[in-house]
Amino acid sequence: MIRIGPSGNSESFYASGRKHTYQEGEYLSTLGLNAFEYSFGRGVSMSDETAAKIKAEFQKYDIAISVHAPYYTNFANPDPEMITKSIGYIIQSIFACNKLGGERVVFHPAACGKALRADAVAATKSNLKLLAERCREIDLDFKLCAETMGKLNQIGTVEEVVDFCLIDDMFYPCFDFGHINSYMRGGLKTKDDYRRILDYTIDRLGFDKASQMHVHFSKIMYGDKGEIKHLTFDDQKYGPDYAPLAELFDEYKMSPYIVCESNGTMSDDALAMKNMHKNA
Image (cartoon, rainbow, N blue to C red):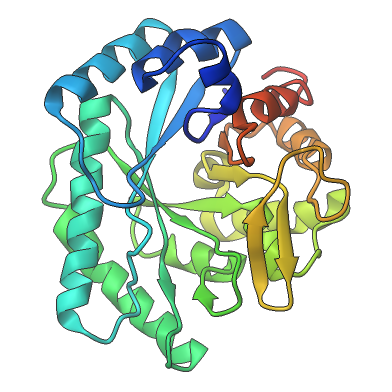
């Protein structure tokens, strides 16, 4: 089953007169969407009462929910204290996601900083092993989704993320195709460009894990250093286009969890994405 929905509350959600995230369950159901991502990008903070209300409403309408961990996780940081903090942010996100009724936690792997890329990648991999050790103590169902990143000084290419996902069964890829396209400065253009990514992932991780990948999708403006800002599907310059990827997901019979991150129009564009599938 393919799940598709927005990241956060779109402009059309507020224009409909709705104000609170728990109302997203009913709203997305009316659109025919079935997924939502809640961002704890600036810190994990939500009362148990609010979480319970969101969980109840989303379950009522069969809307799956995922969360994005704080944006400032960095598993290449040379300071052990900062690694401990990053681990803490992920663990907080796992428990918050569980309270909301979800199991997928998306996180940013790392940034190079002043280190050479190879050294930063090695440090990230080592510290993600520490994260896995800590998370094995948690008696909950969860998936940790390492995200591909859009700036050249960030850790998180397709190959790096796939490699991280071999560390432990709990790690799944979060392919942000807007980020991938930005990192490649417009390299995602054809169906075969997408096919190479899917084939590589299936070959390395196996079909079952690859099929359940997390996906972020939006059109993104990019420059010489990669990602600049998120756009809407109205953009005709930067891309990437979703239709070729939709065809491949259908062709391969994959079951990804797809989150639209357009700038303000994420529900509308998520619906456009759903309509590109044969059976979504």
